[in-house]
Image 1 (cartoon, helix red, strand yellow):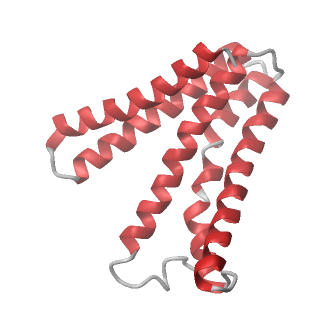
Image 2: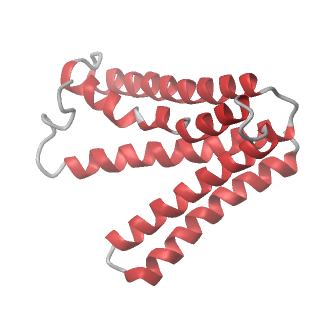
Length: 171
């Protein structure tokens, strides 16, 4: 597959990477809500896996439809070629948000752990990934280790808040 950033003008590459990371963070926050909701309900491992995978697929397809709609409205033509590759590249992290939860749910299906343990663990993995992205962002901004840890904790707190709201809502 061709490098989706090969045709991106110099200086615009950082913007593309920022959009890609934004999608990953958005999908991770969404996945926290999904796995917490599943942990509250009565679902089988197969049902939980199907929900996680279809959520990621649905997020990805929604992003592609929205990107294509916006592109054709602004540019008066469908995105093709380089433009379409960029959309696919930017939106692909929406699919990867399902990997961690899917692995944990698959372990539950294989009786390595219970689904009751796998779903909260999946939420924890997602929250931890938000913490890591916050730390990376803090370090890249040049604030040092303490600023990076604070940024990571703030991002993780957002993930925990999403989980708590979902749990409090009871669905």
